[in-house]
Length: 155
Image (cartoon, rainbow, N blue to C red; front, side, top):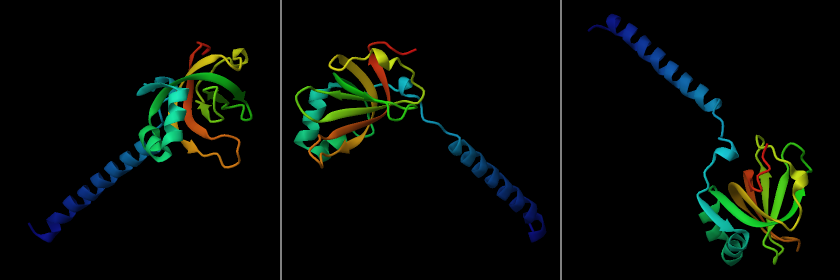
């Protein structure tokens, strides 16, 4: 084949490649994360066990739990509504100042008025890491895209 006949094939190849790259970019740009209620918990544990794991060896616990969906049972410490769109539910084990802070999923709707501090609560969320105690107020284990599992207050 001479050069004159190769040019249409080259142009067609470039156009097909550009169309494939454009389709991939469009799909990635419009990709969304699944809602917290749709996530399946990889592990179920108590707040005391999770706090003890982070207190014993924080780097190992972070490597083991960060980025994973956990279901955690603990005592309700408080509900923080500083951001009305995404409130935070704080759990504790009742014996330490370390808390588990669950940032509720933006698609999750629940009646937070019925939650009383000190009552047992089961939460599910993606562990995002550990915030150490720098000021003597207590460390925090952080969760994102969280939902309340019990009591069933979801609407």
